[in-house]
Length: 85
Image (cartoon, rainbow, N blue to C red; front, side):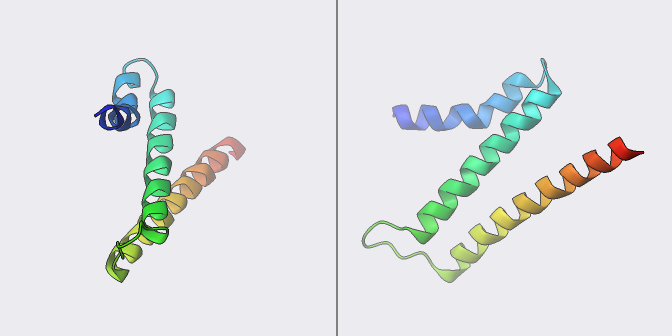
């Protein structure tokens, strides 16, 4: 039960921080997504005994992680391009 509550906190943190600081909310959202992607990769490629993930699940987890990395890279690039102008 305590683990479920602890898992809800990183997901709810951006919504709690948004009225106070949009920048902090974006950072917390990014942290929550990275934690989710890391957990999904760990569960998919280092499964427990007796559990074998299908190739479809593995592909979806890889696609999520790659999409997250691309989104962060594009945001970083757009932020740096705005500073040069």
